[in-house]
Length: 367
Image 1 (tube, rainbow, N blue to C red):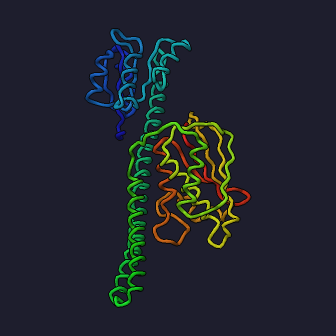
Image 2 (cartoon, one colour):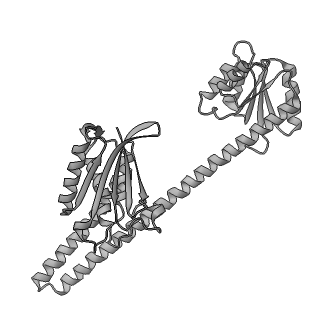
Image 3 (cartoon, rainbow, N blue to C red):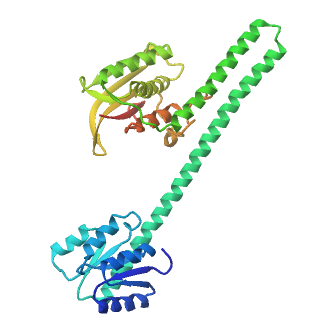
């Protein structure tokens, strides 16, 4: 909105237009005028006003129809409209408001009241635009911060891993006569390169927004397959229990995506106990229940542990890339990928502290 707001006055009675035009211009506003609905729409094609004073009762095209057309157009839907109406009944007022009007005034027109209502709507519109601008700036700031965090994380991890590779190359150069040392150095180099490949693969996963194919599958079958895969891939024999209130439920899912997401939650729960904690004493519990959120039905899959809990320093950023309390290089992408993957199929992932100790991951999977 410019310093001088523009108001479009639409009324088939020239005397009303003239009275309103003089009053608004004296208040420092620019006024455009139209005498029927079609003329109003033609003016708006060239000039978007900050507010419209619109008479309801007009020949050919009444104010209700004009309002509906303006609200159906994304370029004009945000323009506040104040109806001018001779109808003082509740039904008449509701008709105007339901069509999309922001306010109404009744005939005979009270110029002081009209000016006050116009100023109020212009203030509201100005606040609305400031909020939109603020949201855009915040979004840009968050995007810049996210890009910076990812860039810094990539640089830090890849530089460290490249340093490992270069170090072992130097060892091979200086001790190439020892086949045992060369073999060991080559193996460690291969592991470092593989971790770099994993980082790139993970980043590619985050960038991918393609929808995956979903098929009806028994939830219990998916959970047991996930636990089995988790144990096999990590060479573990931990205690993972399932408590479900939905034993026969089927969900539309993708087995690979499901196992990847829940498997990452199981791995986080397992590692939350710390390396010194005996493996046989690590308890992970999976619970399932139906729930409603965002006007949709979900299956809530809760993965709980009794580990050290969420570090205060990373709690607000735990789903950001490379945020972790682990010291190993190349870590901190699991939760980022898990949340991205479940959102890609219409779900959500959050974490919460357990008062008695530990963490609970809550996965909302759409039905």
